[in-house]
Image 1 (cartoon, rainbow, N blue to C red):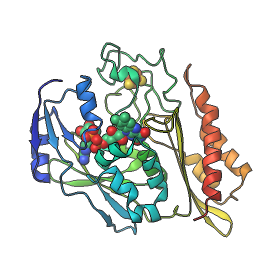
Image 2: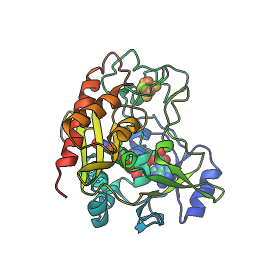
Image 3: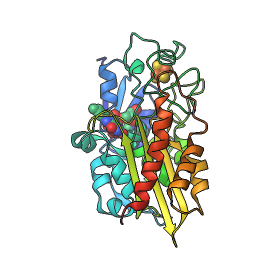
Length: 330
Ligand SMILES: Cc1cc2nc3c(=O)[nH]c(=O)nc-3n(C[C@H](O)[C@H](O)[C@H](O)COP(=O)(O)OP(=O)(O)OC[C@H]3O[C@@H](n4cnc5c(N)ncnc54)[C@H](O)[C@@H]3O)c2cc1C
Ligand code: SF4
């Protein structure tokens, strides 16, 4: 591991100031991803600015009738919070499917959004990887790509975003609150927070240099009765999703009035299924409509040599998640 300086920021101003004065500094949340990457020599910051202890650790009401999650609150406290379990059970279910209890106790909400891909070539420093070292090529595109993207990939990178929490946030329609080193705040729509790889795969998000995640704003809850997070993985613990689906349905008078649907394990960002959501609104919650929505969702899939299985798995997972969301008793 390379040497680095540790800066324990006492407050937000100190953290932002430290970040603005060193372009090679990284914020440190729980460290469950960043420290691993530093040990593997994949990430090489020369300064860590500790932010996990900053005062963004609460869940509060927001102006939209929803809740705001503190950016430094850990994943366990968020997922197990009574209000999250009651009003946003889809988020709770997705978060509790991730990693293990110990990791969730350490991982912060801000760090979860910015965790990096699990592409094996990204971790192996003897292999080419445009995300790790821009311009070296993509080892996965013609190599082992069973775990990689079927949507939105580019010739430069076919990696997927690994977070479960983010899939639920995309389905729910969250916003991310960030602070710029100049002190200003802005709100980013969740669908615009992460990016597709294009020809800059080294950039995972649309954050500006030094921006700090301080909160995640959830809209007024509408999927608290009918929801399901389905995660297909190789083993039931300590495994990332091959494919996952977050499904929320608002049902009134026997009809779907609104659907929230997103997939994980299929793209460089949490993949919101807008066409399928629009299709379902105003329809009856039945097998035929769920199947039609899944066909629409997977229409634009472009699988790679090793991950063709994800197309059929994706369709079946969407139908299954919608069915279980519908049948769930509040
Ligand atoms: C064995 C193992 C299994 C796992 N399984 C899963 C799984 O199944 N599903 C899943 O979703 N995740 C899984 N994870 C990943 C885990 O969820 C992430 O490592 C964790 O969420 C990252 O949060 P952190 O606070 O530790 O981030 P850190 O490691 O501290 O930071 C991650 C990145 O975020 C940046 N950062 C941190 N906080 C902020 C902030 N407030 N503002 C701006 N930038 C910030 C850091 O600079 C760094 O670049 C697993 C991890 C491990 C080690
Ligand atoms: S898919 Fe992306 S992360 Fe994986 S080797 Fe290619 S460039 Fe690197």
